[in-house]
Length: 241
Image 1 (cartoon, rainbow, N blue to C red):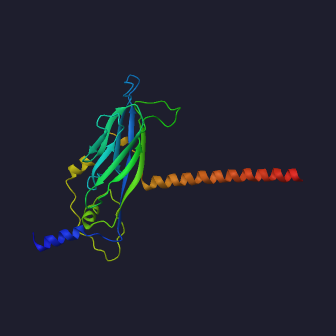
Image 2: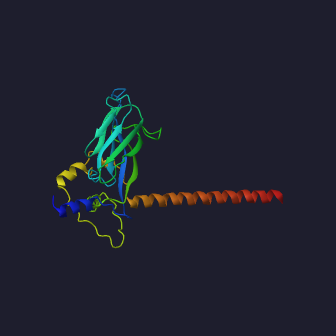
């Protein structure tokens, strides 16, 4: 190995201070009721997963995902070594699934532990179960990588799943790593997933709409409380006259 190649390798391992990269992810489950003719102990078909919030492939960042199922399942520790990071099973009971995410070595040495409560039945007790409309429970989170290595930054800057930061003045980016073969990338993303029509949307626009709706509800509740207080004060003043 020449001196220039050795220098490039060292630079790729160098940490970039005051830089922070976030990778939005979604984890959860989708469960289908199999109907009245299904076995009592296999009433639902479900899939638990970790995906990119915009369904982009997470393979460049996540090395593997380990799903810890209930001890009643055969081989309850399931290891998924390539995207999409998911597994499907059938059963009848709800339980907590521990999800351990392992990253590539230039991102983080420590795994990330997530916990998801498998949901099979509708939240509303009055809702009837349907074989066509599944129960969907998803959580949004962000993997934050402080002081990333140049190697990771070179991969991340051309990847659509990453929220790329505003860099400090004077910081020069390493050359981006060419995007891998498109067909391989599509295999790992979830844009054409058979369940993607049921995935929830976690865009910023939707979040702002939800915040605005919540604010209106709070304001309406405050106005109602004020009217009730004024009514009570009026009754109290009338009784003391």
